[in-house]
Image (cartoon, rainbow, N blue to C red; front, top):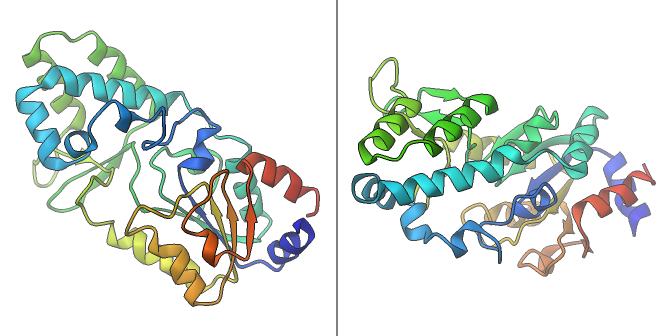
Length: 263
């Protein structure tokens, strides 16, 4: 089966669609997994605009704990073999680009150039009015978390969070996280670019995604409708199985190590 898949890869026009599974090997648990943040924090509160605003006003210490725990997981993570494998495929000219649901920045850190982050990026901060954006460096975020950990008074915590977020230089509005929250639309630019990738694709590699999070879950079905070959790499069964041409029940790193022996 790997010979057939390697042949498809060598033909080029490949797009990768990645989910939480690819980053689990970097130490980032899936949000909905057994060790994920949503087991401890209610996503209806901690992943919605209204919920976060309410926490900021009425329960700032729990919001502080959530920010610290979430960022600590992400800033400690490093790209793994699979992230570098996709970057290598792009460098060789096989891969058109990566469509990722992950917010961890690891594809970019691994060197991938053509990427759409349809759920945003943890280091991006946006103006909700004019869409001005700024990307913080990992070192800036580390310093923020370190100093936030030392804040104990509620008023000091609030002030420090607002100072870190900063204001739009044009609108003077407080910036918000660039991560897409529950109930928010996916960024149009990123979504359009994803479909531009797929319109050029012959093969789609789905890696570590359940296919259950909409609207992102439409992407493999869009590929299926266009008769694009679908390679599905996932340790668990998923809704993508029924439209897949090849299914590999193994970790992404194991899949890529085997695949590269045929390339």
